[in-house]
Length: 358
Image (cartoon, rainbow, N blue to C red; front, side, top):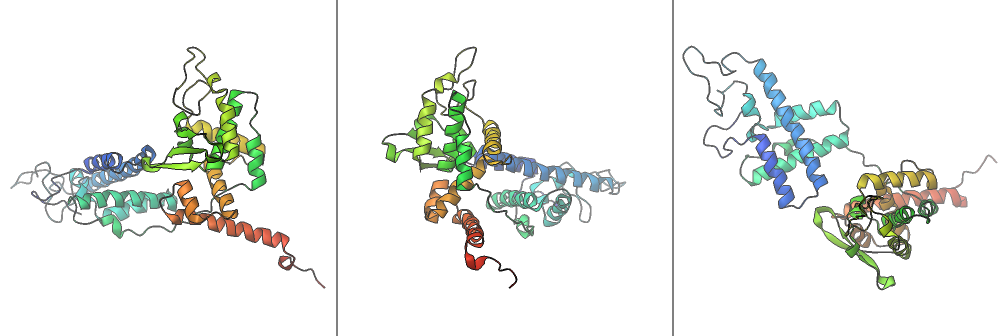
């Protein structure tokens, strides 16, 4: 591993500087969500730390000349100047973008393999590939060294979902006596009925809901990458939202009486409800209604998609409803439906039952 000599096009850009520019690019040009940007930041900063630690460890084991001490007949390398051939790089060189060669990246993967699951490693490799692809397009590296890395095999578990009866039981749990209970029922019905992501639900404004005419009710959703889509609202979700809106004003700051004027779903103190709070509520109602303490908002989204597919909906229509960029993501639900169908067949069809001894 060695840095380019003075005059090469990297210009001494450090890995940290490159990461900062890449994250800005994701935010400003690709319009990636803050959660996506945060995930890239965590993974890439971990890579930068590893590169620094690796360089420091190498420096500790180099002879005095390689560590930058002046030999008897010469001077120490100036800051940013490349080490001589055959010498280990200085920490500054190792954190330059052109220090990210395949050997360093493989060493990083080896360290990750001891503490991370294959899915996490695959995500981190994806982050490194995206960064180096960005730098390659800008001419700051000759090639994408991360493209040479072999991804670990990742078994994607099938989406978890509720059957129709269990879903109905979960919807019925919140009480209708309080504004919070009505809000919770409306959120559950919207997550399940419209198949929203939890972040999309929390981001809904009052103006995003089109309630008239009732048979054409819909909600405008801002999804990943700030992409908008229109999602139909079923009759149950619409009715639950209307009942909640009648008492929404009761959710306000107890001291000032203030409430968020835009947010559809409010916390008990009148602020826009947060993702963590919705996750906790879904878990609670899942335990009470379906005996599923592990229920999470995304499982209700999976449930929506699976029930639509079971009801004969077209895959392309489901893809558009859920806001999936790739049809391959939506096709995962076909496996769920086939597995469910086989279980029903095995339980109900007389030719599927094992005959006892004659």
